[in-house]
Image (cartoon, rainbow, N blue to C red; front, side):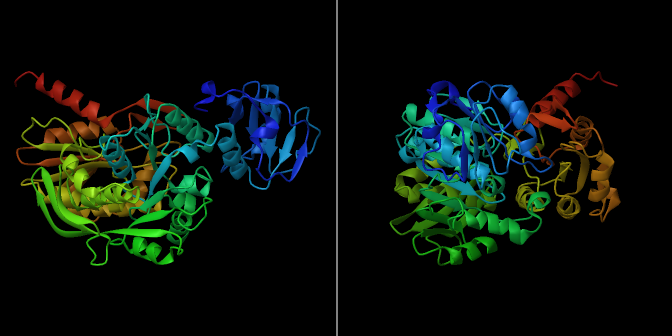
Length: 502
């Protein structure tokens, strides 16, 4: 858990003050030094929260946690035996964890303006851009997202889009200590459903869009939408004071109609009723130029981020800044200097006579957006290297392949993160989306696929390497190996330049 080193031990009774506990056995005066959900990370003084996973029950690890020095146990069930440490039985272990974390870290959420963004695509770009805008308005801001965590005094690589509640609160505590005014954070659907952001009290929460993803977890699109919408309707505790919603997206328009009266709606998009509205858009080589109007004025934004979907991301970030009381006029000129987001339509080796981009697109909707945009700026052939993750939603694999077949001239299907699923099973699902076999090659090794694609690229062509973006690894079964699409591409290009002439 991040942040424990800066926290003085608290008493168990203080940590659980105000947290609903159905049954309490044991002394509330024991010292607590940390809140832990993984029994392997328990150290003396930790409170162990026995959270059920997708495949196993948390209660099975209580004995191990006690053996490692746990000061107390929190569980939703009956331990079935007398424990030698205090045991607290609660109705919802994850919500109890979030409440205890707020107490343990001194309620940093009350000292920060918390701006969140949820939706299928665009969260990382919006949160990173928002952090950039808010810092340039004169105050230090924190960031919690897929690529990195900015804690005010230091920057850390991310290990999860939205971490567990103690990690989030611990990082927020460090932000407060370093003088941050607020926090821009990505809010995943898993985090909402698992109460990782329970009780944070968002000053504003944004909704980007909704398309098929995480069906292995949510089951169907209605359930997926319900989880996302729940964060705007009180499902994470206090209602957000403002909702920044993309009403060009059908799910966003539906959400806007569900908002309770106490939530201020700041809609954005090209729709005539949008609060922050696009009047005109010009997508130029290397630049997007948009005429905007909002209640307090109008202006022109210029950004190097390509494509209409990135224009929507910029509007979403501006909407969150607007919800936090910022005047949009002075913010617009700063957009031109935004350097972009690692692994999000990031151009590799711009000196080449063809274009190579690395992007995180890993859904059919994200691939459609990316390829449609690249088609507009590609005079030659449009080619793609892509894969589908293992042990994840199988239903989107054929859809992703179908989109690539529709919009690209040629593609190489390869490994993404197979995890514990055989690659041939993943390929079998992907092949269901193949309509033109002459336009696709299945190559198991990702490095080999990228190499073949680079060999095929010629003057005026464009190659998109999709799916992993900023990630620096590949996951095979229980093994994680280093792999960064950007670094591999540069290495292969350097090697190809060293080839002897025939």
